[in-house]
Length: 227
Ligand code: CTP
Ligand code: MG
Image (cartoon, rainbow, N blue to C red; front, side, top):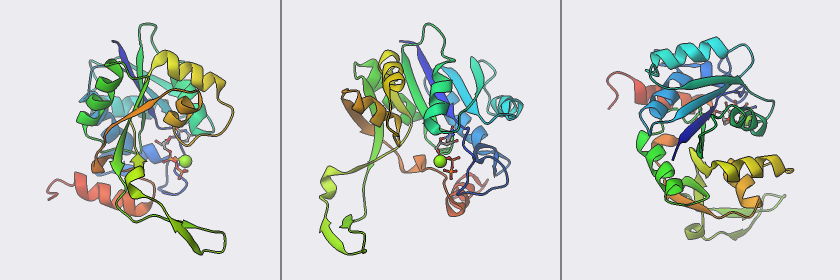
């Protein structure tokens, strides 16, 4: 199989409000994108497509260099107004021979390389789609518009979805082309098209940097003498 990893890094980071588009906000000595790329480059060998905001193409190439991507085939493309649009822009840059695609949020900057391996292995073994998940630890309540608890949800039926999400290329391309509704992740697009999505074990370190406290947590984890 030939693999491509599409790293979506074109968001503005409104909730983080870090003074630059989120992927270009500093995380220790380097950017969030640099750290995300280190994980990608340490995973299975792949064409890497990085999707960035207009004007950040050269900054992305600089992050490729510091993250050690010298021997990797890297394409940098400009993203869209929505995450789905950015994914579509990334898919348009895939090499001809690619038959498996992983879509990864740059904001999940500390995702361990083994998670890329697990997702890739599941699709290489025949799954149309595979996503990493972690168990939901909190007790979940169903709440009405008035804020009253109206029931519980069986936690054993729930899982929190992470990235990278992996797909047979033909499946993802067709589902993205056919998608009309808004979807919160790529697996939802593919599930809407009728495909089965399998799960593999995710990792707590794959948390998404969304708010300032998330960035603080990530900074502590990459600090030179982090415990
Ligand atoms: N993303 C993207 N293009 C967009 C929107 C999001 O490539 N138009 C990417 C982000 O760069 C991020 C991932 O999708 O790596 C997950 O999105 P999110 O965490 O929501 O990032 P932002 O949209 O940048 O943040 P916010 O929603 O707070 O503005
Ligand atoms: Mg967003």
